[in-house]
Image (tube, rainbow, N blue to C red):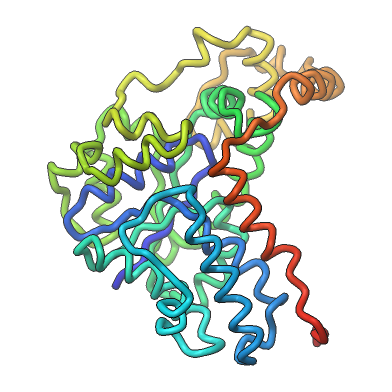
Length: 332
């Protein structure tokens, strides 16, 4: 099994490219369950992993998270199934085994994995999966921030989205440069993928070691993709296929002031990634951070998170990893 990982901010077409690649006959792109990040970042809470009670607790927490009604997979996991995947302490074998079972259930040999803030766990991935390949996708921050504000699962508004985008791109660009030097990563923009999906997918697949298949462009006809599109309101576009006009929406929706605030936050990363500002350099220079901060406070009051039951359950399951404390454990 070959592993491929996505480096992409939320609200930036991450589910879209995952399902496009899932349309390939050899690539399984499961709907995200956010398994890798909470597990890997909190492994120290379960050490020593080869101690049976600690490993058993980790399996309990993973089983709970996988089975939260957040997204739908073909494979059904229980504690007994997880126990068979790897011996105590073999976290790489356990995590890869989970995705390998889902890929086998789909009749495919390889897996494409979406995980938020992938840069936080990249050292682990490079150590345990040295042959894995990576796709770095970005989106215009003005549209990303607009989508962030429109999604009730995310707290805050445009400014929160813009700050998230900026922080992510800085880390993703650093990771991509390191990985690209080893021929392990490819970069693309969401807007280019919409404009010419076949060309961009051919570029991506060349790095992943596969050839383009026309069936990828009809990914939305897959029954499981349709089911997941109905699972979360944020994923509804997945059921509609390639939406070529799903870009530059900020021009009709945001005020000039809102656009300028986003561009002020993201201007340097935008320039590096090929996004031109609507606001002049002189106008951006004149924007004071205090004005942006005040607008951010207004948005925080106006756009509190109103999460659905699936998202709440997923967050609660992930929280267990960040709060886990095993009796008698001491870090050394």
